[in-house]
Image (cartoon, rainbow, N blue to C red; front, top):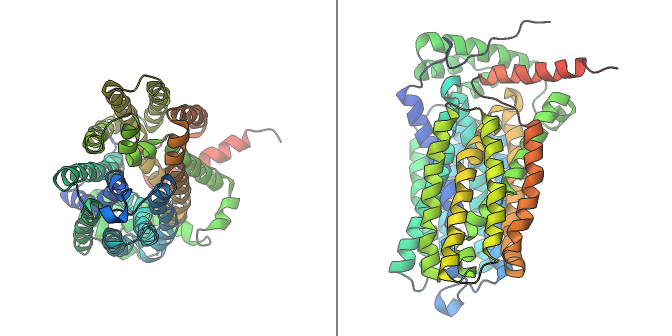
Length: 479
């Protein structure tokens, strides 16, 4: 058996503190995550105004068209993730993010100016394409430039920027709703997303390409040049040797694609990635992030008060992700996810129970408090780990493709929840949360059994480990 590559751990000589330039790259790239968060969060405050009739500056949305407008972005994101993953393998991570910045800008302006529901849906699909592309490309890009010892903390800045974008959306929604509560308030809410899109495009013009993407194209000189800009000299050479070895092995194989799913250990990783993504959405997190004002209005709270109260969701999400980033440096991925999954399941049961209480202002704020507990477990322990693990587990030669497939499945399940939730909450009320709790019990069982631990190893070492572990497990089976 060939000797296995040694793993780079936080205490090993190969580990390196990320340079200031790595942090700059991550900060610029995660403007795509900020847009992701803003564009998914802003709809929560825009919907109450879009429900108004055209004579009042709205679009006259019904529960069905409300679900359609909300879910159209998510359906677009599913295909954006699938195509964006492929495009990032073909054209590179940096060029893909530049293209997505242009699409973000066009989508934001299109939704802000949409005269009808049909045109709104079209531009929400366009905007969703950019959101999905960013969700597949940005975490992968950061994972590929980050040192192994700091990869967890750097990649999870992507999740921090997502929830920061959502907080910005909730805050701007509240300001606009209270200062300009009249006609077309929703247009201002949606149009603000065009500004960070411009910043993302300008910033990425000055950023380097991923050294691992260069290596995957056998452009080793350029890969080493980038590593020398973002690592100390000795660390750059050691990491380059490992990357080059894995890239040369991958070059002897066919281009990554659907055919790779015939390879058992790769198929297992893709299945884990797909199911994990679906499980994240079936927590019901986006039913709360997209429809928080709708839920609070269902408990009897007024429109402006519901939109303003939603700011608390954004604040708790940001604080929770900061806590999650702190935990990632000290705790493994698996225990974080499993603890978080148990916490949100209990929270969903409590949330459903709140709707059994008599209608009152007190009940409205109890519902809000339980939503915040749910968001703490979700954002600190599951969301932070989801994007990180998805960026870590797939082999280099099909990383973009496999991430696209996994995140496509995540967005499709997201869209399903987004479309059906306003219909379910309208028909079943708080019983909707009991249904979500039952689903999440099954999710917990799956994660306990199949979720791998990825902390403290280089991407190349993880790839070798997964392949080796699968071979060892099947070698030990009789027959």
